[in-house]
Amino acid sequence: MKKILTLFMICSLILMTGCGGSQSGDDSKKDSDAGKIKIGMITRLNASEENFGVFMKKIEDTLDVKISSHVPVFFDNLNQMQMALQSNQIDEISTYRSVARYMIAKDPRYQVLKDHSLEFVDTFCFALRDDEEELRDSLNTVIKEMQSDGTLDRLTKEYITDINVESEPPAIEIPKFENAQTIKVAVTGDLPPLDYVSADGKPAGFNTAVLAEIGNRMLKNIELVQIDSGARAAALTSKQVDVVFWAIVPVSEIIPEDSDKPDGIILTEPYFRDKIVHMVFKAGK
Image (tube, rainbow, N blue to C red):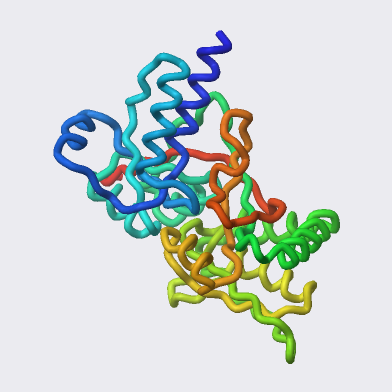
């Protein structure tokens, strides 16, 4: 029974863990994928199609089973993934409960598949280069303060749980401090309303509210830089940005906590957590 439960958890987690890179594959791969469920995923910080395959092989060798019911398809931004789902290039998408609620409220043709009997949860952290330990520690101090005084709970309720999809979230002014250090933070807009960019291309909502509060408490200037999710790791390591708004830490004993942490990258304490769900698109509704 324990082996079956472990296998179930690993299979589900595999389907929910995105990897970097663009859609690719030779004819032999296409043939082997025929008839399988194609599930879209937003690119994460760490992984590639190659090491994803290595990970799959290790699981199969360890448990002496074949895990082949789903085929992951990776997307560098949410718009590409939505278009692929709507045009039947993929069958499902893997995302978070808060994102699913937002998408369904905007367009009821999206539907959440029946929840998995076991919950899988990710926590969200900031990612930095490993030479920014002092900044990481400062962020950790502020994150813990915002947790203890209820600020993160308040912002989560206002911008995620109780969000009004009938109107765009209001613009948030990020404080500016004369002669203060400027911290460039990458945001994507690929996990609305968690990581949100408004229709006019300006970051707003939860991510901006959290970063404005952090800047105010640290007395630092926060500059938001919008990039695709697939470009986050490169933007960070090339010093285009100093901080990435979200990196993933799986809440699971099966997958190590640093599974979404590339070499040379460090993570802060988590500031948010959410359950993973799968969605489909019903065009006829």
